[in-house]
Amino acid sequence: MVIDLTSDLSTRKAFSEAMTEFGLKDERVFSVAADSESRFGAFRKEAPERAINVGIAEQNAMSIAAGLAFCGKIPFISTYATFLTMRACEQIRTDIAFANLNVRIVGTNAGFSSDWLGMTHQALEDVALMRAIPNMTVLVPADGAETYRMVEALINYEGPAYLRIRGTEKEPHIPCAEPVVIGKARKIRDGNDLTIIACGRLVYEAMEAADRLARDGIKARVLDMHTVKPLDEEAVLKAARETKRILTVEEHNVIGGLGSAVAEVTSANYPVTVRRMGVTDRFGVPGKEADLFSFFGLTADHIVTEARKLCAREEA
Image 1 (spheres, rainbow, N blue to C red):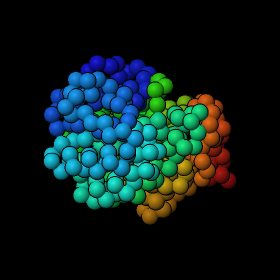
Image 2 (cartoon, rainbow, N blue to C red):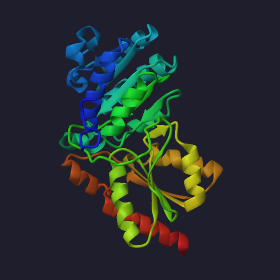
Image 3 (cartoon, rainbow, N blue to C red):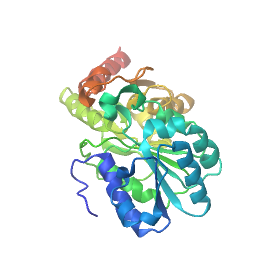
């Protein structure tokens, strides 16, 4: 291990380091860059025979990766999340997912981490697109440590997977003793008054909100739902039964993402109130990352407000 997994670092940096460490150890691993080679760290320099750059041609990248996977290789494709999931959606669906190939699609600069580049680069619909494709696993790590462990797990994971990471800014480390297991939520805080289910960068905001709520006597359970598909239904239903109210928080459109997945499970199995926080069916706007979280109502302060409303509504 070449990085400190207890430190604050970007998910993109963690991916680069993990790709270098684990990829160099396994000759099946290939990198496929759609112009953006820097995302793969030193891997492309140490193993140039396994590093492919197709240029700005995301559709070609997917088809090439499919060919590699058919030959027993494990290709990791990476560039901006918007271009991978939208421009190459047909190739992901038809060339990769239909054959259930071991291709790892790594969408970077997701959510607000593209800040001033605006709606063309701010992926706020990618989770919904990937969730809807059969066979696809969808991963949204909360910090660098989780990203690192997911890359390690993906080396020998069966089937296609979408890994959603952010930009180059350092992100807060989320302390948690529970291991990172694909398909299993991690409990960050315990509580029985309500459950906050979050993914990605907003796990930290949810954790901060829970700490503030605790000072007011509201005990909020916080689940880090790093795997949006397959969703940890057991953890969701346990939370529904024990806390009776759920608040979901995501750096994504409220349609089709984490909140939708949670609501689908509860409505079919144990109906409770599910309040979804995210981008309310609109496009992104240019701005500083921190300002965008505030503009779209996705800070710890906003979570605290919604949690209080939810608890008051249920008690009324």
